[in-house]
Image 1 (tube, helix red, strand yellow):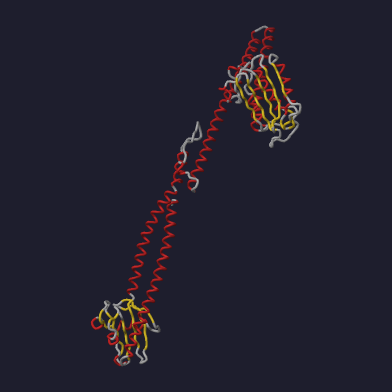
Image 2 (cartoon, helix red, strand yellow; image 1 turned 30 degrees about the horizontal axis):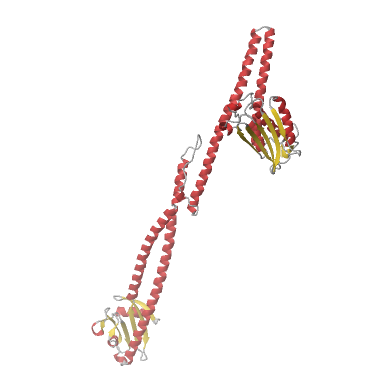
Length: 499
């Protein structure tokens, strides 16, 4: 059964049980009260009959004589007299109020036997008399030895109880119908958010989420997602879940697109040196087969030199890709104590001879700027940033390397006064295989992984690498915590790189 059906069944069942119990208790209480009132009337009539008998001779006391002395009698009044002289006789008044003289019937022997059997060994008894119905009777014995039985019909009690039970039954049925309608409406309104949740979940489940670009726009309406109610809280939770899933799917799609671009870029980078290696190999073979020994030796030597150069280029590319993969897994860094000021001096000393047509400046504090990190990888960050500034700026550009400490961070900046970075590529500048714009035309055969590697190394140290650029003012800023909580020395940072 549905939840609505179970709730309605439970509510109506319990309420019905309660109403039945109330009806039984009420009818029992009313019946007991009416029985006591009837007993009081029977005892009153019995006392009146006894007074009448005292006023006459016992030999003349008969049921009809006693009844005639009552004058006006109650409807259905029954009197039985057992006289040692005249025997047993009994009369019953008509069920309509009136004078005794014209409204009594004589009891038959069978009816008298029924009354006697009911009173055997009892003072008061209920008896059902053929043709008369149910009676409440009592027996008294006079001083003269007469036994007098007086009784009143119980049909009034039964009528009142029947009326009461009928009223209770009708009221119960009407109340249960009203309760069922009210409960159904209340439950239906209360469960409406759950139906909205089920419908939304069904629509989402029917969407193809396993491929392509996916956007989940289905949401529970705000009116059905009120967190103040239990059902509304389910709707609000589902909306939150759908938001999270939608964000995750968008991130997955972005990662897939990035991976496709990465594979395409890597394939493009590898295709050129592979094509060169193949071409020079074919030239060497042709020279060996068709040329003179001297020409073959000269051509083969040139081809092998070019093959070696292209092999080195591919080796650098593969090593950079391997480094990025290991940095993504957090497996490449070996922590130790690193002086950024000393690294800056060494990095600038290495970069200066590669671009004598640039102006090189350095600003470092007198005190060491010490961080916990991998000295070899941090040296690579400095080298990559200086190489990027050297490669993408024209001759005569001034490049300034600055190291400082700001609060709990070590800050390294590489500034140049070159033409700046095109805003259109600034957001993708740290992506893998990213290329500079026309204002920073590539002058060497770089792989486009330098800044991506630098960013990955800095983030591996718990820091940030950012860039701010406008024409004549470009600054790359590295911020690294002095003592990152997640970093601890795990080896000799000054040891040579295993790669």
